[in-house]
Image (cartoon, rainbow, N blue to C red):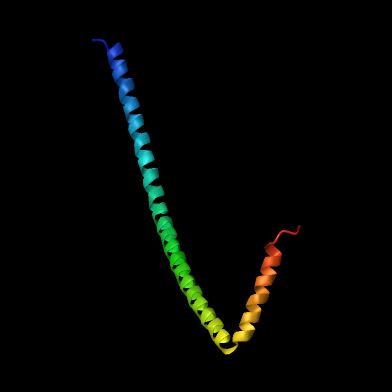
Length: 105
């Protein structure tokens, strides 16, 4: 009866290695579970912030659209009330723009 045969030694080493690997896998699994538990609320917070930012941008875009409509209507009203002044301003603006964009040769 041999107690220290190569087969029994190899079996013991394999069993210890398997036990070590199992403990390492269990530790890694627990660490991942802890990380996931902490990451979940952070991801939800980011998702909420993203949603709030999108809603804020949509509201601001709507408000800018309303302002644009108000400005356009105001300009139309001014042109209706002061057509000659509006034409003179348009001509002046055209002259200024042409001077700015023309080459200085």
